[in-house]
Amino acid sequence: MCRLLAAQTDILHTPVLSPCLPFSPVHANTRGAHALPDAHINMAASISPLRSRIRICIPLNAHYHCCHATLRMRRKYDSQRRHLHQSATRHAAVVISGTEMARQLHREIQRDVEELVAQGNMRPHLGVILVGDDPASRTYVRNKTRAANILGISSDTVVRPSSASQEELLELIDRMNRDWRVSGLLVQLPLPEHINERAVCNAIAPEKDVDGFHIVNIGKLCLDQRSMVPATPAAVWEMIKRAGIDTVGKNVLVAGRSKNVGMPIAMLLHTDRNHERPGGDATVTIAHRCTPRERLKELTSLADIIIAAAGVPGLITADLVKEGAAVIDVGINRIQDPKTGKLRLIGDVDFEGVKEKAGFITPVPGGVGPMTVAMLMKNTVTAARNALMH
Image (cartoon, rainbow, N blue to C red; front, side, top):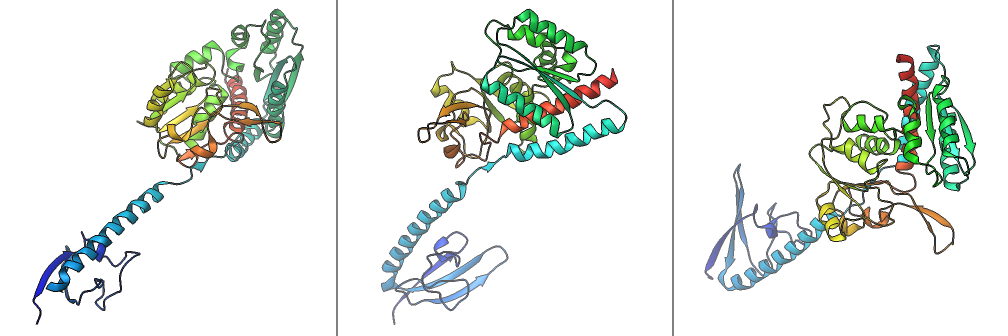
């Protein structure tokens, strides 16, 4: 009779004995246990409410081989477990469709417009001024007036040649400011070099400034007061909220410091959610063109949310993004496609690379762009309502 060596194994802490392992050896007749290779096993299991123990009796001359088999199986299990853990954390990001969100917002705006009209009020009207013949500007204006028409907002576009003087443009703005039929007014940017954009933006009446670029509206934004919020920052904030992305106490990196996009986005996300104009209560850092690449990587590695608004194609790559971060791409860059030779639109984010690592991501096109136009329409309706109140 061979001498027996008794070994007690806790199945809660020894994975090799778990019945759920994909590489388990031949099953023993006893439920919940597996036979170890090259061993004749007499098994008795006693189960308590706290833990289950299996008493394994192994012939002494088989003990050496059994231990080594167990060790090999444990190593194999650990290797597979590491692989499964890595696979589980790798997932494609949720792509936030700005086109779909804009459709939802359009329905809300349409209801607001029809409600205003049903109450006997004038239909909201958007006035647009276009200076010059820049193709991109013409496209933007066409998209805005088309959206207005779809939503029941009337509009008209006044076109001036690129040679128009600043004085002529300011006089036109003054006339439209005083026109009670105009609910909202915008001047399409950029303007010719001889015209001061800041002077033009400040010439628009703050209550009609649907772009939100007037110094009064920017000041109110900084003071957490209700105002016309610039359409693109408002679009970013709206997309974050509608996607259910938590901002309270989160780290946010805004790549870009422009006064019309980067800075207002930072203001919206860092301010108190309990103020007159609720903010995101996030900890916000702003990076810009003078931020070294190494420093940018340090900042993005800590960021739960990254807003790319620098106008630099491919600025945000996968190696800069923390696992599961939300990445909002505001960049609009036209580059020549090497295959077709045609111009195509890309953002500031390497979409294909980053989407495999991020938790949320917006595409370009079809991301922030459609929502920007929708928020501009919402500002126009807000301006019409405010005019009724005053």
